[in-house]
Length: 149
Image 1: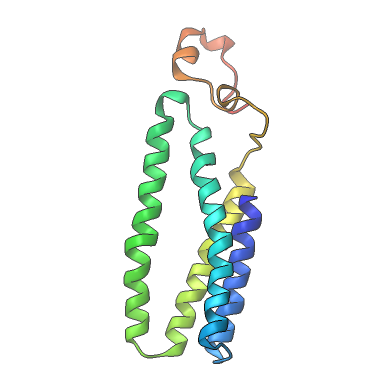
Image 2: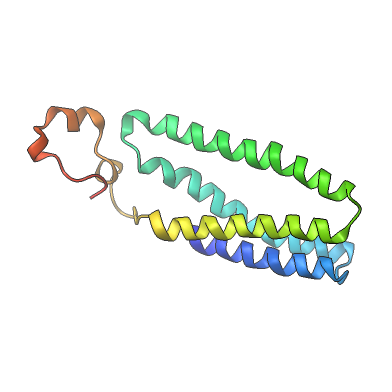
């Protein structure tokens, strides 16, 4: 799901960027394009925030969620609007186009990262995904399972 939502939103962003660059969008069609892109990207981001924490042992899972949420919020809530304001202030449609392309590349990279490092956690307990530190520490090293096995 994460790969599909981020990948599709990245591809849609490239399409919307191109249509913006050639001035083929009205206010309504651009709003609809952005709504579709946001719908998909938001679903991917929500699933990613929850899934990434499952890769961490129980004792540090909450911190993992907080860290990834803070990084995502800083990027999407501070850095992106600042960059977008600079691009709009340039007055050049091409500058905004390249900003859209940067956003599309980031979404496509997120999809690729999920392909490379993602794991199937469906139907598995959280302890099976990442052994709790307290349980792992109580076992001899020779009896510890490999990480995320």
